[in-house]
Length: 74
Image (cartoon, rainbow, N blue to C red):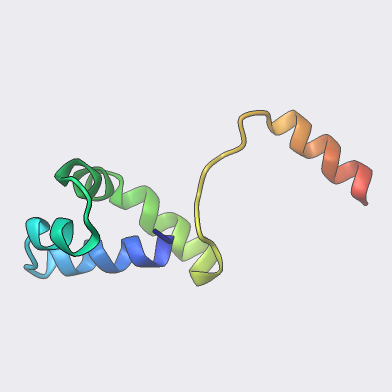
């Protein structure tokens, strides 16, 4: 699910939609929705920084390799 989708789910849960309804709609277990709600501050901050252009927000495992690749490509 994209970051934009996660933001929408969290907002609707805050406005009263039940988590169980989301679980049925997306065919996921309750823990997936719980983790999204638990990580809401991180999800909202990524969404505010990147907007709807971003699909995920994982950090690279080896940031030094990413930086070296960027230098090589420039």
